[in-house]
Each structure stands twice: as structure tokens, then as C-alpha cells.
Length: 306
Image 1 (cartoon, one colour):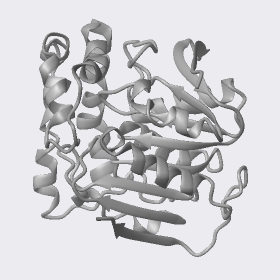
Image 2: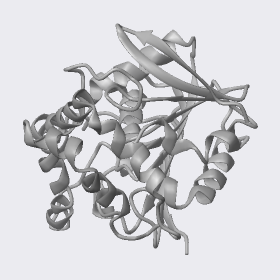
Image 3: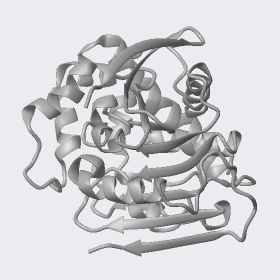
Image 4: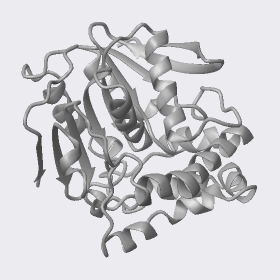
């Protein structure tokens, strides 16, 4: 399988993109602390049927890391501009972590642009607070460390073990991680501007977005027409399954699968599961590419796999 790499400019931002295959477009969008390479086990699998398009987000991988633009709605605008620059009027989305959050925002603000969304380990935009939320919030402590001015970027630049520890905590990946895999993701933060970009990413969330989305219900009156599937590792050490509540009235069509003995980085831990589930979803004949879903009776559900 041949994977090509190039750079395109969107609104002055130089974006790296890896591409493979041909056919209907399928965009893959990574989260923190990863980059395009997290999809290494998915690119050849899906490129047999789709034109696979895998960008690095602003501040990650080989994409520019400017000093601003890390609010998630800004990153969503990056994705919309990226699609427009490539001439994509519709595309499917396979996402993880912040890539999924960005996908949700695009689905809300640009209905029909994303025709199907398969997300991994990222709760929807409508958290429901309860007593369960208190211990769940404690898992976000690593964000506060990264968000600190000066100390956060320095931590990423000087201590690769911090990133390695986040990737491996919970020990949920059978066979473990290789040093090469861990370093592919941690080495990008040796660059000062990329380390600062991550601090800005989390700072914007902790001090602005968590308030507007969580407490002020910024997206409270919105809903998503895009058929959506969410897979979530039950042993996620970063985001608790307790956040998987409050979404029910905001989707036309969503199914959530909670996977025991899998963690936050389920794409790396269970690539065969991601490939099988997402391929089945994307090739389901009930979803015709390029057709915006109408307003059928809303559906939601959750199932476990053992």
C-alpha cells in the first residue's frame, strides 16, 4: 500500500496530510498526544475501499503550530476549510479523542458535510453532571499539568516519560508498546512551539470550553443528524465512561459500544476491532453516501462486547 504525503495551505496554515487509496473520501482525525501515524493500522485496511485522507491537526505532527487557534471550534473550522481546499463536499470521519470532539462540532454546525462518524473514546458534547462526574473529573488532572504556562510545555519538551506514561497507563494493550511507537508521539513535543500548542489546547478547554459546554450548555439546543457510532474503552484512564450520559436526545442515530479491558487508546490497543466495526458501519447499505439524513425517529443505544 502506497501512502503519499503532501502539504496544503488552509487560511495561511500549512497542513500535513497523508493519503492512500481511491474512491469515496474517508478522513481520519487523531487526538492528543498523537498525530497522523496513530492510524497506521487503519490506513491500509480502509484504503482498499476508500480514498483515505489523514491530516495532522494544528500543532501536531508536521502541521504548523502557530500561537493561536486551539479553541475546538477553531479546529473544527480548520477541518471544514481543509475539506473545502480538497474539494470535498461530503466525507466519512473516523476519529479519536479531540478528533472526535471536533467531528461532533462540525456535525452540529455543518450538517451533511460528515455523512457518517465513527468515533473512539470521546464523549459527546452534552455531558450530564452527577455524583459520578466528580471522580471522572479527577482523571483530567494531566490536562492541568500540561496547561500550565512555561511548566507545561517544559514538561512535554524535557520529559518524554510523561507522555509515555499517559499512553501506557492501565496496561490495557496486549503485548505492550514498543519504544519506537511511544517516541513517534512524544518526540514531536521536543519542538517548543508544539509543546506550547498542547498547553494552549488544554488551557482553552479547562478555562473556557469546559465552562461554556459543561456548565452553560453551549450546545444544549443543538442535535446531530449524522449517523454516529462511538466505541469506548471501559478502562479509559483519561476519560471516564461516566461521561457517556446526557446525549440521548441530541442524535438522530447513535449507538455506543463500551469495550471491557480496553483503554483510552483503543485504536492502538484493538486495531482489529476498530477496523471491523468501522468498516461494517461505513459500508452499511442503509447509509447512502452523500445523502444528508432526514429527520427520522431518533434512535440511541448502548451495548457491551465481551
